[in-house]
Image (tube, rainbow, N blue to C red; front, top):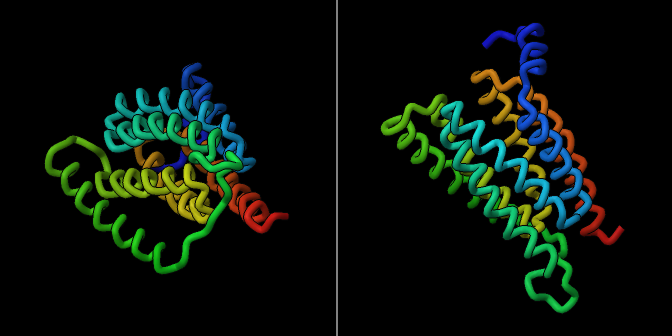
Length: 201
């Protein structure tokens, strides 16, 4: 889809109040997550609730199911961050994974993405099924990493959000593209913020 400034302005003008709220809550979610605030999950829950409906109506089926998953993870993340997974200090600390574990996770994610993309191609009318599937699979994984406070989740999100921008560009979600561009920037902020927290700075 060619970039058309007039179309972007039209998209903003026609933007329903629900999507505006979802965008604001989505940005707030990342900022609060970077600050390690458990309330990020509350903001994320309502943002993804709105996006679940939007993506389902736009036939981005994997993205719709992904956002439904996000709602469940928002509940899980809130409980985990509030109670520290039963730890005495009731604080879930930022941790890091070795390279070998990341390589295993990436290879596994690619295989699942190919399988999910095939299923979407064969059995659904989904657009860009393999890209849609890859965004879904790695987002599921990265969200779990975020809930567990694995430092490198932010690096995964930077790549995922760039892929999502390509996906939504082709389907005309201009405002969402802007949101995900902001996500890329905020993911960098989150990474450096958590790295300081891990170092005890």
